[in-house]
Length: 305
Image 1 (cartoon, rainbow, N blue to C red):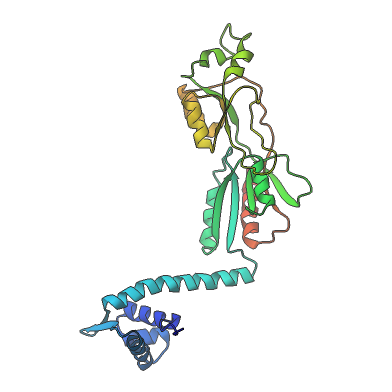
Image 2: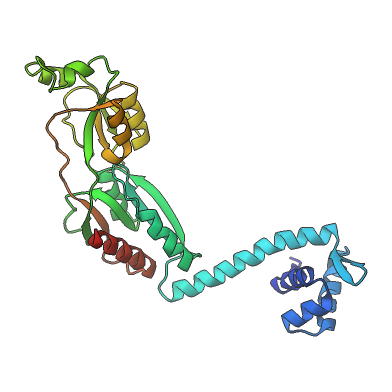
């Protein structure tokens, strides 16, 4: 196989010439003799059998073919630089990628601020965010699909080698749409409805987000399993299904406060089953410095609240 004439060194030379506008200034930047820079370009032109530069007065300007090589080549240069940075980070204990699972039923507004601050300091670390629901988060952590869980509900699985820290939990409110055909009958505070409320509630569909667990025992959050179920994939679908009048379910208060204030959604006075703590969790065996930096900051914010 013929040797590729376009090397990293040649790409760096073309980049310097284009930015500085002359072979002499590029040579100065690269700490090379001007003759060495000229030779590198001339050799590449001969090997490719195409001109790469043309002279416009005292300035060297890329030909269309030369610009194509440089544009594509800069992507390669950026990739190799990132690769070098990542290799250095990995060698010193920094992970190239951190996968984080967030419980969809909860909200942590400080989370993305923490991630942004982290990336400003370590821009080469890739962050992969995924949604988890109930037992699905613990399963993802056990199987190594995520490095960190944010907001997964207890209890924490025992004897799995997890480090967990209890964190704040958003209030989940059982609600029904005001336009639901049974809304007036479902409100226990309405006079005359107290005797029929249990039977009315059993008639209402439960809007349930699929537990993302694939192999473990799935669970639902908040309401009892009486009545028909209507399954959705995420919290947005659940909220819109309830707003449409399809059924009832628990929603985070911060997501629906405006709807409650406007009377579009009505709170149900029913028994709550959502008092479990939420947890920040990761494997004790995971010694990554990036993971530790993120968890330390999240724990610090939680402790100050």
